Image (cartoon, rainbow, N blue to C red; front, top):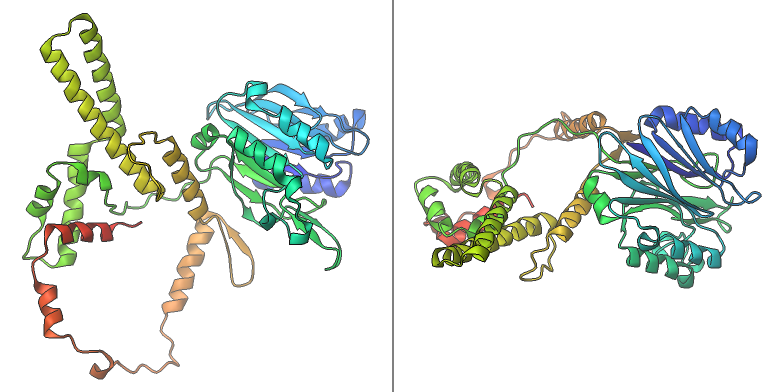
Length: 446
């Protein structure tokens, strides 16, 4: 789904309409949220009718201040849950996903009114359960790095915003594009900029849309950048999966015997690594199967055993209960190692089997490491899998193409230090199981 959130600072002008219609065509918008439209009444309805959306709902502005418009296509269903002068809460029903809540925010420039916003916009107060996305102009920042000049930063101005984020347990979705979403000033001395607009979400929303991203579009017809939120990204063509060593394999009692059995001292190190990688993939499929399915099966089995124990405490059932519980503990440890390895967090707490944090940490790190746009040599931003892939391919083709003007002088033997006999003996000696295990970690792509 494609969502636009924009403090347009006036919806009556022709430049605004042209710009919004361009975004609608280019990004296939399903929802458009407009803040501070500075138009109300029948005139506002005429503008909404002209914007090529099927339905809309408006919170009237006070004079030329405030106001929130939400417009949407009939491919989705939207239910208005709550309205407030500074925010609107909706429930979005999308046939391709589970229902989720959307709160569109326009934070008042007045600090006392903004505190009221953070007091009223609460999951507990509004009974907002499940996936929740909050986006808009908060008129607040979280740190000094989000303003163009440290002299413009006020810690008291952002305290209530930071406290609200922590209290609600919301996650910043990050962004690609320009750092600041608000510019003002025509000369260097008067120039100011800040990240006043953002999209944040609950853990449930992030888990429901792990590929979601936010793009700061260029500032046009306003001094605020539109936020373009995409809940799903286009998928790259399927590529062969690279071998990754799973730390949970080492918990299996036959791990070392398996390695020793499939490691040949007659082969070179690289050949052994290739062979063992193939064996590990087959072993993982046959021995570990799908760890999440195994956990469900063992939990169901444990529940059945304990229900029977409640009826008849036979010795064999007591023994089986102990065995299945031990099996579940091993699976939980393996699952913890799996998500720890993927999230790459260094401060895992021993015995913590709650993997919800690791799911979110993994999603967040994937989002940061994704390449969604690249700038070419002419300064043009390239967006889209095919354009990015072709640009990278052509760059390295040009980089490694032979230069006819370069001197093709081969390296002489004197250019490299000789290999000592001691080094040669180390290369050809047998490897211990511990060194083999370390080599397997080196094979990992992390």
